[in-house]
Image 1 (cartoon, helix red, strand yellow):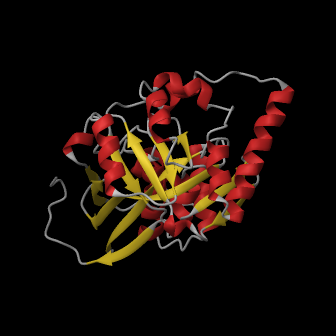
Image 2 (cartoon, rainbow, N blue to C red):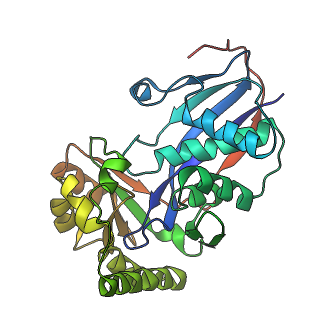
Image 3 (tube, rainbow, N blue to C red):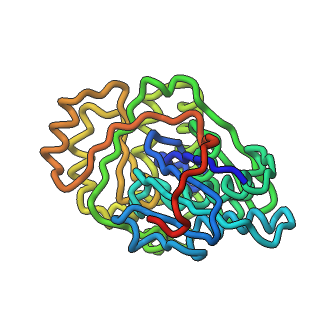
Length: 308
């Protein structure tokens, strides 16, 4: 069996009104160093150990086993997986999706399944429930996807993204997705749904046309989830006010609390200004990742199975 490295990008979901269906891969990464071992063990950074298990209850392992089972394998050979994690946990940047996608790729490599991107996205959707984070983590770029447990369809956009900055303003507290979902209404008025859908349609068209100004405008006009979720983010109103002169738009990334401001040009002085305004937040200028998940074969080290 081989040693290998898996790198999975962070993702930002929804982009405003593209609720549960649009996402982008960004230039923050989880890197998994994987080597054959006598038993399964996941080494994680110290700051994440309270949230990420080291044994078979780890989401990476569960996703790998799900993938193996889907292709008629009952079990997986043991591996030691050492994670280097730059993606903050439970902040709205796809940390759980990096685990799901990393687990699928782990099984793909160990069992030599030779899965296509489509097969990987379909497996990830079955685990995660919706494609907004997992699809861009696998394929890279902006992914517009539809999944209903039976059918999966998606479109990938990459042109023109290289000059944009997706500025992540990351508060210093966790926000569980389930808590954020509980704030959403059980139903909405039909006419409101039509208007919200129209905004999402224009967002997609603007992204495809590389009309970044219009895309940014649509990001701020979501009515599906942001009006409800922003009450959990104490910094939201002030961040929105602080970036409105320079940014093309602002939206809540996934369930939050991270907020993403879209810039067509961004400099260090702007970063310094925002950092002084929000000293308790991380200010991260990110680029789109257009490659998605990558794998690199490695030489096996002398690491013992349980070494952290």
